[in-house]
Length: 226
Image 1 (cartoon, rainbow, N blue to C red):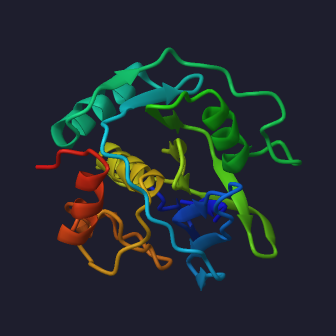
Image 2: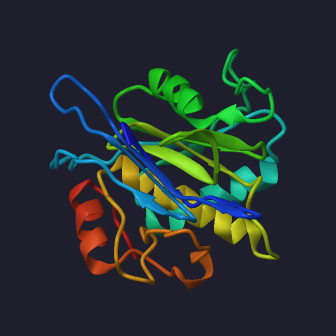
């Protein structure tokens, strides 16, 4: 998507993982969004991202997101990422980031905001309990779990559509999936990989870790994975 995509999106009757290809002067790429009715892809320009230096991952809670949940995400990230991870103070939702119906926040607008405030050497993962959406083909307001630029500096994950007793575990998987996209990872065909394509279903409980191929990309980007 611009490459929009820990992007799984779950809704009762609506499921989606999203990833957006980042557009720049050097690299203009189209967007891709997956949904429960299948997935739509447009031609993309492949990129190679080399970033050997470790970056600091910033956890950015939006208003009313529980501090305990943000702390738990930080703890899980530190188990697999050797760089610095820190939690920012909660922030209000930026003005004009809701959809026209005022029922959901636009994930692309939130990512644009986070990207503008993320300095070089940092990655930002926004966290919210509110419903978020993006545009998928002719669907102007498609509800999603999360979204991220691929590659990029920021992404976002929401608990709103996550179901089950292991809701926090699923949130972490959505978040790490989206962070993977910021590092240039596309969706993966390996069923147990954290970068697995949703294909319209909730596979989160089946996902265990990054596969060998995805790990190699992250290691080259400076990640130390266990």
